[in-house]
Image (cartoon, rainbow, N blue to C red; front, side, top):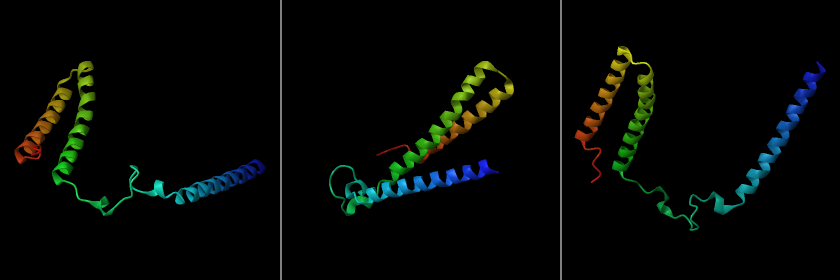
Length: 116
C-alpha cells in the first residue's frame, strides 16, 4: 500500500515539474516575435501570406501521393513473388498492376499529368 502511495506522489511531483518547465518554455517563446512569424527569411510578413496557389500543382501533388503509396505497396509484392511463385499471388499482383495502369491512363487522358 505504501509503495503505491509514494509512487503516485512521485508521479504527481514529476508531473508538476514538467508542467512548470513547459510553462516557462512557452512563456519565453511568446516573447520572441521573430520565432512566431510565419517566415524564417528575416523579413516581415505582409498580406501575401495567404496567396492562392495553382490548382494544377495541387492535383499533381495528390496524384503523386496516390501513385507513390501504390509503388510502396508494389515493392513487397515483387520480393514475395521471388520467394513464393504461386498462381494466386501472381494473379492478385497482376490485377493490382492492371488497376494501377488503368488509373495512370485515365489521369493521362484527363490531362492531369500535363503541366502546361
